[in-house]
Amino acid sequence: MNDSVRFRVTSGTRVKLSGIDPAFKGRHADHASAADELQHYTERLRALQELLYADGRHSLLICLQAMDTGGKDGVINHVLGAMNPQGCRVAHFRRPSPEEAAHDFLWRAHRDAPARGEVVIFNRSHYEDVLVVRVHKLVSRAVWTERYARINEFERALAADGVAILKFYLHISSAEQLARFKARLQDPSKHWKITTSDYAERNFWRQYRRAYEDALSRCSTEYAPWYAIPSNHKWFRNLAIARIVVERLEAMNLKYPAPAVDLAQIRRKYHTAARR
Ligand code: AMP
Ligand code: MG
Image (cartoon, rainbow, N blue to C red; front, side, top):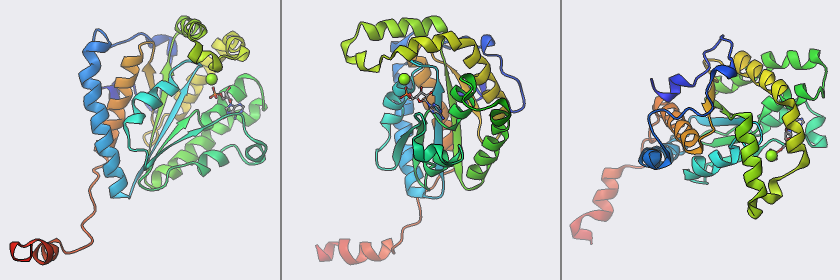
C-alpha cells in the first residue's frame, strides 16, 4: 500500500489516533537506508513544482498541523525547502492579530490561499480555530461545532477553483514530545523556541487528541484529505510527506504551456548555419 493511501483518513470515517503508531517506520530501518528514496522524492518535488508554476492553471495548498515539536518546521525545511522559492510561500498562523480577529475565522486563510501556479504551506492553519480555540474554550461550543462544516465549504470552494489541498497531521507521542523538549533544553540554538506554555499545554494532551480526532474525522474529504503521518521518526515523516505531495502533483497531469512563439521560424531565422 502506498503512503497516499495508507495514511489518508478515509472520508466519513472516525479516526482513533491511539490506533496509529507514531513510531511507525515502514520498510526502512533507519534514516540512512531511506536517504536515497528521500532524495529521489525531493528532486521530483522540485521538478513538479516548476511544472505547476509553468502550467499556471492549478495551485497547491499544504496545511501542517501538529502538537509542539511535532515537526512542522522540519517538514518545511527538509521537504518543502527543496522547492524553488519563486512560486512557493509559507503562511504562519499565530494568535490572530486585531485585524484578523475582527474578521470571520476563515478570512486570513482565504487571504493567504495560493494563487494559480503557486504552492502555499500553512504552518498551522484555519484548523487552529477548532483546536487551540476549542481546547481553551476561546469561543463557545456552539460556535466551534459549526466550524467543521464551514471549513469543508471553504475548502470545497478552493478545490473547485483549482486548488489541490493536502493536510498533514504530524503524529508524535507524548513521550517523544517530552524528549524533544529536553533536547531543546540541551541545544543553545533551540533555546529561543522554548516557552513555559509549551509545558503547560502538555496538561491538555487528551483534549487536543480529541480535538484532532474530530478535525480529522469531520474534515477529511475527497477534495481536501487529511493524512495522519507517524512522526516520531523525522526521516520517516519527511519521506512520507514528500511522497504524498509528489503523488498528488503527478495526479494533476500538469503540462508545460504551448510556446507563445513559432519555434520553427525562430530556429530558421536565428539559428541556421548560414546566419552564424
Ligand atoms: P507557533 O506556531 O509555535 O509560533 O505558535 C503560534 C501560537 O499561536 C500557537 O500557540 C497557536 O496555538 C496559536 N494560535 C494559532 N491560531 C490561533 C487562533 N486562531 N486562536 C488562538 N491561538 C492561535
Ligand atoms: Mg511553537
